[in-house]
Each structure stands twice: as C-alpha cells, then as structure tokens.
Image (cartoon, rainbow, N blue to C red):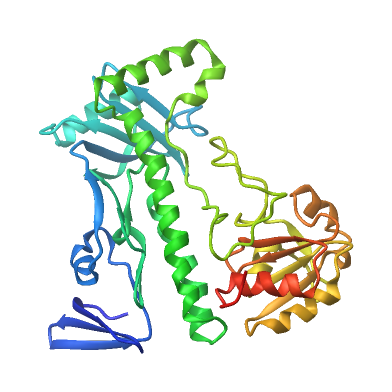
Length: 406
C-alpha cells in the first residue's frame, strides 16, 4: 500500500508492467509482473492509458439516500417499494431493512430539491410518522450504466467500478467487484507460481466481461421499470402494477431489482460442457440453476477423515483444485490424473464420507460414478460421468487454460 501515489503512466513489455506515479517527493516507478486496475468510479485516466472504451450512459435522475435508526414493528423482514406515492409524486421510494433497527430509505428526487435537514425530516415523517428516529448517514447520488470493452489488456486486468458501473438496484456493483477480485486472484496466483500458463489470464476477460454484461442487462431492465423514461415504459409499469394488485401470479413481473448472485461460467473456455446438465438460461428471480459445469457449487457440510471436525465443500475447494469423486467413481484414476498438471489438486472420495453422502446428493452433487472438477473459486469446471484418467486429466488441463485441452 502506497499512499499519495497518483498513477500517471502505465507501460507494458513482455516481462511485466511499469507504473509511473506522481508523489510529493517526485515521480516514482513501480514494477510488477502483472497489475490489476481497480481505481474505482473515477478511473477514467487509467482506462485512457490502457486504450479501453467505456460505453454506456449516465442517468440524470437524483436519489436521496438516508439510513435511519428507529422502531418500525413489522418492517424488519422485507423491502418496501412505493411507486408514485402522494408524498413523492411521479417518483418512487425504496425502503430496505438493515440490522440493528436501521432502515435505508432511497427517494428518487427532482433536480433542485430541498436538501435541508428540515425538508429531509418532512420526507422521513411521511414514511414513519411521529416517532423518534436517528439519522445515521445521508447522501445524494446519481449513477451510470457502463461496461468496459475489455476486462484485460496485456498484463493489466480491470476490476470493479473502473471496469463496470451499474444502477444500484440489486446490489450488483460491489458484489460484482468482489467476484472480479476472486476470479483474478486464483488465476494470478496459479500463473505466478508456474502452475498455469499466461493463457489462463485470458479467461478473466471471457468470464468477467460476460458477468458484467449480465449485470448490465439485469439492472437496466430494473431501471426501466423503477424509473421509466418513455411513455411506453410508464404504461407497461402501470399495467404490471395493476395486474399484480389483483393477481398474485402476476407479482413476479414487478421488477424491484434482482439481487446479486454469482455468475454462471457455463460458456467459459475453462468449462467442460455436460450435455446431461445444460444451463437453460437465467433462472427465475430468487432461484439458482441446479449444480453443473460453470455453476458455484452448493456449500455442503462435509467431514474429512484427514481433519478433525466438519468443514464445507467450498472451504475445501479453495485450497486448490478439487476432484470430488462420487460413490462408484474410479478414485484411483482421479489420483493418477492429478499428475497431468503442476497445480495443486486434491481428491475427495465421497464414499469415504459416509455421513455426508445424503447432503451431497440432496444438493445435486456426486451422483453415482461422477467426478466433479471444482475450481479454487468453488465453481465446477466439469462434471464427468464414469470417467477414466485421460478424461479427468483433459478437464483439469482445460480448466487451467493449458494448450492442447479439448
């Protein structure tokens, strides 16, 4: 961590990246094998240095956000959305319950609105009535919806708000940035330790750019519903709300924001497809696809004879690659296949975990004869049916971006 260093230049060559910084003591140069550009929403200069385009749009709508602490019986377990209420005409208000009797209120407000504490109190009173409350935090914001055309350029990876910005409905900005970091971390570690080729890093763009585009599509649809910009969008929202008021089956069409979820790397170049487990598009809001190639595995509790006590599948997976062998699978072939790669690969024999078989099966994992290849980020790279050594080795090599993988 170096404070007071403003990046003024980025240069790359075949061996690494040179970052030039302006400091109080004069220019400074930093050298690394790779760099991750995560300068946040104000990283336009970094994108220009990298020649990365950042297409999209900025929205002019203003939002007043305020966290209050108060007692609201019956409000703590669900979000509330008000569309065009009389106390915020023509705009909506969102109320999110948070821990410790705290509520986040998010008003869409017009330009030039009264930002005084008195006006804010009036807004709050319209919602909570005459009861005591404490303001914990308040701000005004606007947002953009943009995605960089490249999430990697040479030896520099782009992550977080520097690479993508979304409307806040669904909490997909920060969550997606964390997933960027997780994706980059294991790949950089494997390349720097000589466990995988540089080509593995090419999959960072393929996976995280697809995730960013998914988030953009989902949040843009929510934005069009919550803040309609055309007469057609307004008519659609009104008709949807009218139907939902009378028909419970129509309520799923009310787009109040699809909460953040892990991206499904089913089409990644690292993923070995399984025709028996196709990913059939985006599941309904609030649902997840069944486990399969590219999907984050369920965090099932397991017991390992090698270690005392219970652990979870994801915790074990994060120690390297994991081969989860179901009952009936050729465990010996899986162990031999690990020699095909230099990376750390553990073999977990589900048959040796008799207390966990029901949990694995109940989560859709480890059907008889299956071998699951699980990445360090706990996404399945392959689900193989009664595989031999060569098939397991090929899936491992593919998941590591090694040349010659099918």
